[in-house]
Length: 501
Image (tube, rainbow, N blue to C red; front, side, top):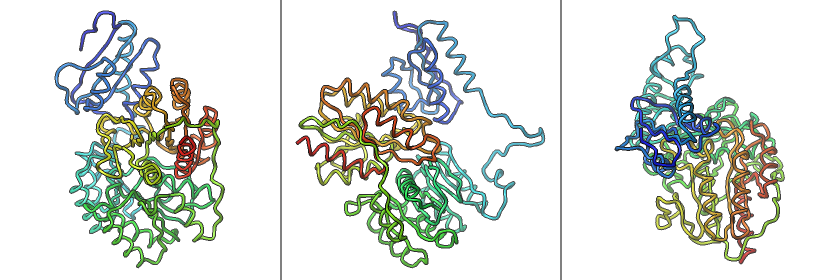
């Protein structure tokens, strides 16, 4: 344990080997300990390079050369008594495990295959794999060998392993959803980050988690339900993977009597793969409409509206809140702080023809790469949900820490800006995202040397645990203009920028 420097209060920095907990649990532990009286800083996380950088910024860097498979416990407190109690609380939280209520004869399964053995073999059971990426392939392969479909929530799986898994699944007549599949709804059961939407006849195949959430929520607002949302992983429509899971998912929905129409949702796909999928979709009995983003089709809301027209359903007025009417200062630039990668892509595709080049950590063109410091002058859109920023950390839909720090940085920079953000509701997401975002927005607007208009794309439904209207009202009360459509939010931000020229 590192010794505290003079006058620094009490601090504890330690590394533990042979201990693993998922990032969501560690984030919850950090939050709980950080709320204790007298604790001024805390980070309980795997010792990844990003988390070590955060610890150093807090003045809690560990000694030696930590490795990512070690658990970092870093706490700063007012005095030794508070510190000791905080460390004890961390130990207790990490030791807590859900205990089985079964009999002593019930031995928990140690592998995916063993767990599936006890479940029905009629295809109604699937496996969910959510372990570090280097271990996910073996678990998913076990499920495929047992003849079950599998959702691979894990990221960090090499692309060649993804291809091998999806080929094996095709041969076995099952489906691999993922890797890095964060959203799915199967027969009404929400998996990962999914929203509470009504059942219906539209099936979604999604190489995009937040894109699927945006589309399914807009359909719900229009009174149209979904049969299934089959996530296939963000790389599935790349040249390397070739749409293997997308083709299998389309075939599965074509054979599903509950599905009458299909919408394909994706970040910009590889052109050759998009053409192959379009050809295959044209041979199916079920009508398939594409909502794959591209410079020619940059608007998910427009794709939903076209689908509604196909169905003879009315397009509603998408819910929104006007905000406080703050105008942008002359010379203002766009600062997009996103948790959803597809929503960030959509914003850039809509904004780039108007604004020109937009710097990003997930840029539309390689020459616009933002680099590792995630800051630059001019137009910037950051995807905080990108895999490089979630190693050893919870997704920003759960843990907003990095995004809130970036928000404060925009305000402190002195550069006139219009702020564009997404807030995604639903199962698995922050129970009250407005609870942390509203104080940060108020502080940012007070700090900023120029007016700071805030525009928010709020993706969710009234049925979500957080409630769309409750969140929208709280965000609007802080001065933000709130839209249920990310495309509408982006266009409003562009209008504000145009008016400031």
